[in-house]
Length: 230
Ligand code: SF4
Ligand code: FES
Figure 1 (cartoon, helix red, strand yellow):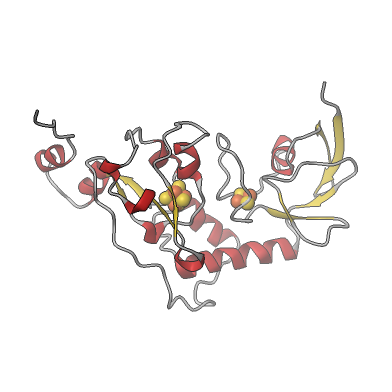
Figure 2 (tube, protein in one colour; figure 1 turned 90 degrees about the vertical axis):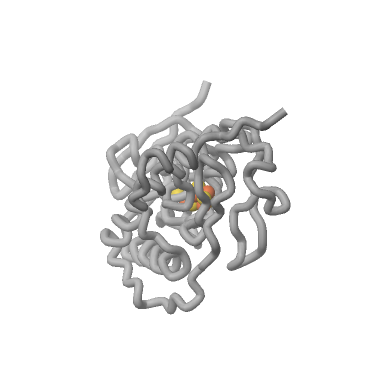
């Protein structure tokens, strides 16, 4: 049987089961900590760090989505340094990735006063859109490498393993094995990656064509899986 742990978050007393994350403990008392890479149905990896909070006595901030509570912990989710860190992270993200179709992140940028002119965006990621199957498009110029699509395709839901990553450092992108076209991978076109993507990087082809003003007949023709001739 799990035991209970008591702590404070922004001065508010909280008691939760041991093993609970700071994020869930905060939510249990109505304190909202922002997340980007975290999804409640996927394994948290602590990649984006937007959820970072101050903890008394800790040298560095803690990522609330992966850090478990401890007895007597004092957590601060909205200090100046926490807010400054979030603002800088958002500015860095916006300097390299097109966030025009990421409404939640755009809202955060407003909330934290992110100034997109502060960081030179000369090296914004600019890659061609993959249009290699009838169901969805992949535009990695809008991808924040949050890893949600990879996880939902793998052990968190679909066990299909069609997606992984490619490249290093700044050039790291999500990709198929050997960069094969999606039709040549193990993808079963379940659409779960599209549903889990927090930006416009993965988009149903029908939606994209509707947005481009295409007529229903062309959309229907372009988004049907053609029967293989025997
Ligand atoms: S394609 Fe979407 S879900 Fe996948 S890593 Fe990029 S932003 Fe995240
Ligand atoms: S939401 Fe916690 S690290 Fe991304």
